[in-house]
Length: 402
Image (cartoon, rainbow, N blue to C red; front, side):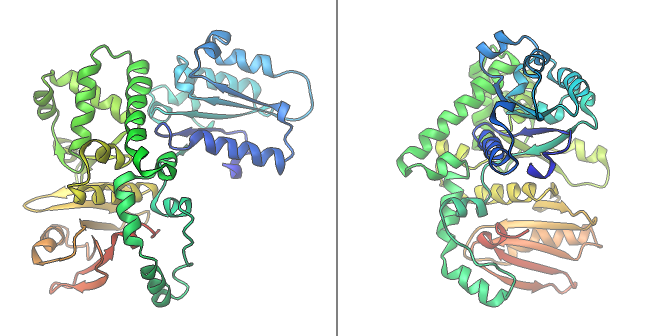
């Protein structure tokens, strides 16, 4: 964020509630005051979620007009949870065009409308989007004050150092309780309760309130269905039948839940867009704690798969899944255009059956010669009789890569 702070772009910070957006903004403000010598009186922080704030300022332009008073130095206005203002996109455009060069704006929110709104075209060329997710595994370790060696300087030696740290136990905790900052640092007996409170906030503040939902009970049923079935393919009809709701309403509920950043929908990997849209999507959660706080840790495989997905997303990669007779958990497209299939097998023993998804993918996409299998503790390179290479990587090491 500091890299772009002197530019006129509106920095738009979005992500699920409690992921650390506001803390990040406070850290930026602290640095600006201490290192950039920005005067505190030139900073205005507005919580747009506060009814009193919205009653005091009917329009975002009112805030800028009040704050843009004579005085030395550039002003900075933070609009936190801006989605609670109607037509915020057009209002922000008007503010930008009127006060460009005089007021810098930081905008944050807990709704994906901050990056997917149909009215976002008003801000084309004016914004710098930033997404904040819960802690990655590496950030989780930092929060635990675990110092990691700088790997890849001497990989063999450094890999042994990492093994000695016993990162497997930390992976297990990460799979169970995830990466929300407050939950990471909370006492073990409080973690699940905090997670349930987070879910209530997402449901009631970021969905019910924003989208004016009347039937909250069925909305909650959809959310619980999705959390329980992490890593599985789904159809809208299947969910609708399970909760006793019509398909269109169910589809709307799922859209609202996705917009709150609670989950991701993974599309099928295909050469044609039409084929891609016809296929079912898979469910991924922004954090595994939304599953474990309700359903426990009995089925750990899908949670490992989910953590791999979020790690890939944090790396800015395009992510799909693939299925024919056999399934491949993820297919990624790199910036160079390379296609890499990734299979997650979080288990001690790996056998020939576990490779069938990757072998099937190689046969259907003959130009693809390299794949990855994420394991519990196996680290080795496997060469197939067809000349393909499959790299087996422990989950803890994969989550520390790229």
